[in-house]
Image (cartoon, rainbow, N blue to C red; front, side):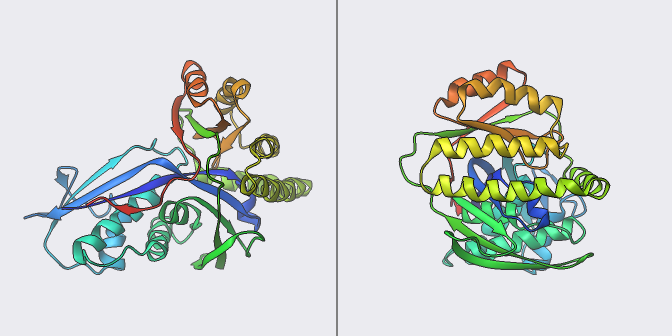
Length: 323
């Protein structure tokens, strides 16, 4: 049996602004997806017949990335991520599947995280009709703190570049990493509203808002500046600075109308015990994230407010082989 694990992700800064060329900063989280595969007499997934149409990411990894023509596989997927919550579950599935299949075929071959990030991005693009950012797949594959931008961001280490032919033309990104200082006395606590985050609809809504009110472009520029400031604070271990950047970023996202009453309820519950708190991802539902030195207290506050909490350290390890 081949088993692999890939983490989910949380965006700290840069939601929506990344669509317009500004950087986004994301961290891998402790929770993620485990995929195990073994040869069988027929194709199955989680004990049921495997339907390629229902599992486009896995199908793309098997057929297009690996051109797999071996024996049928019994595939098992275990996820510790909230579904449709903006935590990168489909990217984690793609990365874990790619790593497990690579190990199954060539167990002595060292894991190639950049190759898996590219493969996962391709699977995301295939499933999303040619439109996909490499943020989720790169963060899940590489682990730690990942910066995605239209160009290399000062103070980060360049890892690789990504390009994609989209219906709107070719897009390109620079993927880099920054080091989070060791020994930081802080955690992130995610709170799921229980409502799915409709990424496509939220991105389209922001585009319509900008068309109707071009002055909102200033909010995008402000988020870009906040992202640079928050990244600098994180790299320096200045947790208070990171928290201020998170709070300020959230106010800008609210002005872009991507928050929701459910998100605001959880954010207000977590704020008294947090260094900083904001929505994470597309908004409209999904999750909020708090930076805190007292994760259990924040998790309790989120749960009392009706959310589902998830505690993680800042910047977990990337995709890895389990056996």
